[in-house]
Length: 93
Image 1 (cartoon, rainbow, N blue to C red):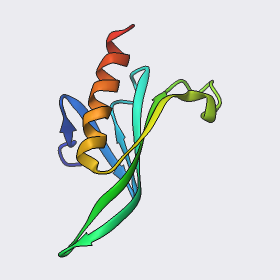
Image 2 (cartoon, rainbow, N blue to C red):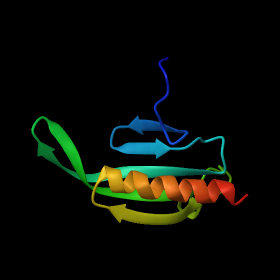
Image 3 (cartoon, rainbow, N blue to C red):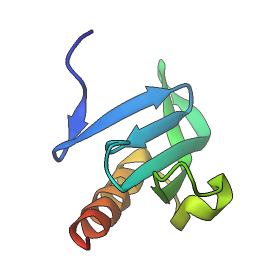
Image 4 (tube, helix red, strand yellow):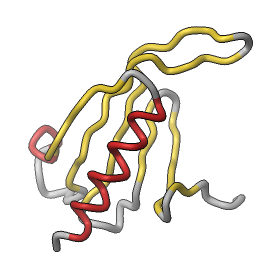
């Protein structure tokens, strides 16, 4: 397996239109879902991204794991808020 992609010291994993930011070994993780995109040249560019700060505890029901959520108009804006939310959540142990 190749090197894991990281952003600001936390791993990024993508599956289809969902991007996980952070480690499932930690108490919190960010889930970003690309809800809408448009073509720019050959690329699909995200125009609507759902961002959720979630607890990773498997004993909690999926819908109860969501701590915060927001929607952003680009992946850059989503990554910005994700990085801040994750840092704050992980440092408030």
